[in-house]
Image (cartoon, rainbow, N blue to C red; front, side):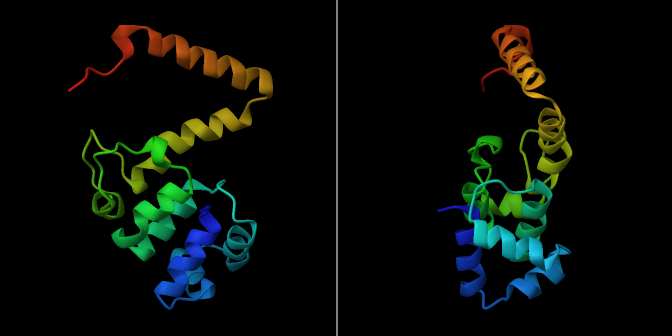
Length: 137
């Protein structure tokens, strides 16, 4: 299920309107209606963070999964940690996804296709060098 459908279902479960969520999360109501109508997986990470802050830990993992953010989230991180915005240095939270990964993604998306390809190659090259990889626990 894509983000829009998941969000719509959660709002229905919580007896919350799109307008109420928009006001609480400080997101334009038209943007939320568009997210729900398009029902795709391309979602602004800051909006996901704000929505998860409002809807709470019960729904954070559903929304993150629907927004295809699972790849950014350590599998050991629980929905409660995500929604609470834990500052644990080894775990990502919804709140610090914006400050770390979204900045990288914004830079990536600002590049032309040639630059994006080059950045992917650099990342692959760095990963292949053992000194830059995290130690396995």
